Image (cartoon, rainbow, N blue to C red; front, side, top):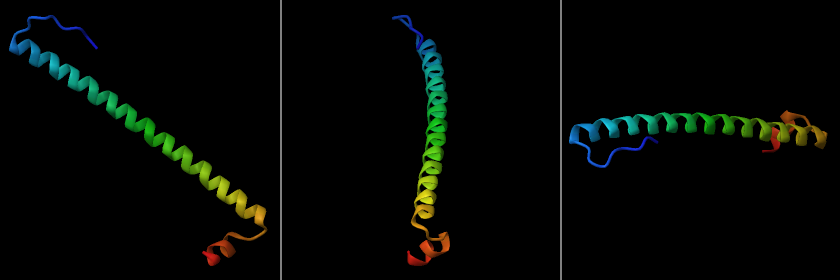
Length: 68
């Protein structure tokens, strides 16, 4: 975050704030993208664990679905 001078004009402060808003929006976009990636990885791990449990039970996927 850039430091701003203490006595800014309204125009200078508006330009500064617009810049800060743009930087914050970019950071937010990156954070949301990373969150989406992590959620996808978590879902894949959960699906693998579920599939491994089904295989370990000796039942087929169709049998498990039928019991649900």
